[in-house]
Every structure is written in C-alpha cells, then in structure tokens.
Image 1 (cartoon, rainbow, N blue to C red):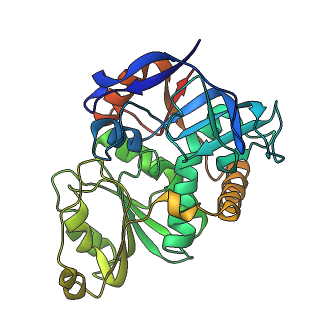
Image 2 (spheres, rainbow, N blue to C red):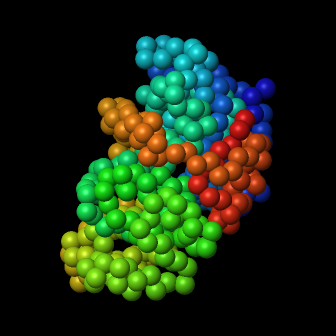
Length: 324
C-alpha cells in the first residue's frame, strides 16, 4: 500500500500522520507520479498549523519530483517513465505516489537531478517571479533580503547578484550570517532585536533600498518600510514569524509613496506558458552554476514531523528534502 502524510486536525508537528492511502488511476488530464524526492517549505507549516486553513482531513506538500507511472485520457505531453517535477497545485506532495493535473508538471531535463529539482522548484520559481516580475531587478539596484540564508534566500541572493544587484541580507544567527555572505550578500545584518533599518540607511548613504523581499513577516515588516527609498517596493511573501501587522494605506504615502505587494506563486504561474517560461529560466541558472540546490538536510518522508520541528526552530539551512 502507498503511504502519505495526512492531518486530521491543525496543530504542531505531532499532528502529522504516516497513513496508508489508495492511489487511483489518473483521471482525464492527470498523471500518476511515483515520488523520488519531496521538498519541504514554510508553506507546509502554515497549512499544518492552520495559518492557511485547510479542509480536513488533508494531505500536505506542494513540491516534489518523481517518475510518471500512468497518464489519464487527453494527456499527450507526458508518458509513463518521464521524469517530472512540480511546485504548487493541489496539496499532497508528501506521499510516496499521487495523481496530479498534468498541467502542473514540468518535464525534468536529463542534467537536473530529482533531489535538486525537489529542493529548488518552489524556491526557484518563487525567486524567478520575485526578481523578474514582481520587481524586475536590474544592474545597480539595491535589495534588502530577509532570511538570506533560508530556503528562498539561498536561491534569490545568488540570482540577484548574477543580475548585477547589490544585496543587503539579514539572518538570525552568526552561522546563517556567514552562509549569507558565502551566497553573495554584499552586507549581512542581524534582524532579531530590530534596529536593522538604521544600518541599511547607513549602508546606502541615507538613500534606502529599491526593494525589500520579506519572508519573515511580523518581526521585520514595519521596520522594513523604513529601509525603502521613495517609490520603493515592499514585497511581503512569507510569514515565518507570524502575519505582518495591518497598516493604514496613508503610511505608504508618508514613507515615500511606497509600493506594497503580497504575491503568490500560484498567480504568477497560473498560465501554462508562464510556468514553463519560469522553469526554463530556473534550469538555465542551475546549469550555469548560479543557483545551486544547497540541500542542507534530508529526512525520511515518514519522519516529516521531525523536519517540520527543525524548520520552525530555524535549525535548518538551505533546502530540506524528504525521501520516500
């Protein structure tokens, strides 16, 4: 019998259950995929905890790589034996096998490994839309990247440097600040305890940064607004410390007619052509050595609770991969 991670209630890592499940034949437009590697991301914690409420019972996981076992009627882009990966779509990646819409899958090139794909699809596609579409970064731009040594940060920082940006990164520990420097940050600051805005202003000669990429949320959001130049862009794309506080729109005017956005990968890849274009760009920078998987740790899929606990405790670096 196939096994999967399931939850019947929201809560801590202890609610994750390793359960036997039946995987049906793929419906029209679907693939059945046998997973070889599953990516772990903070959105999995949000789903498990109830920050992003789910209809229960539910599976978890949005990112994986594997091999196509069967295709449903009307699917002509894939065939059994094809290696594929995906990020997004219906929850359920934390499983030994599953069915999913064929339009969510991306064919893996021969030179992209399964573990690397599982580690990078969500983080890489997220970095792509953040850097190329939400705020199109160009040479000379100055960025503030929170959690620069984390999952998305470890992809976004070297990619931003490749584009010619100056990157100021933050990280919560000395070890992670050292890693952020290795990733290419020009300057690295602690964000715990606050007071990073004054240092950002000093580093930019009072000007401020062009864009802030903030996956931390509550602990960094308001101070990040103080780091932006007039007409700068605040990109809030995560909540690892909790939801950002509500603000009155006039605050954006007072601080320099700032732009504020809360983007999601789903909207940026809703069209098949956008998904394929983003994946092509990601594979290109992977081949060039600009972006690397940087798998910091692996866990057996059945031990996903331990992986969740370490992720929430900020004990992980880079990407975490779960192995079926």
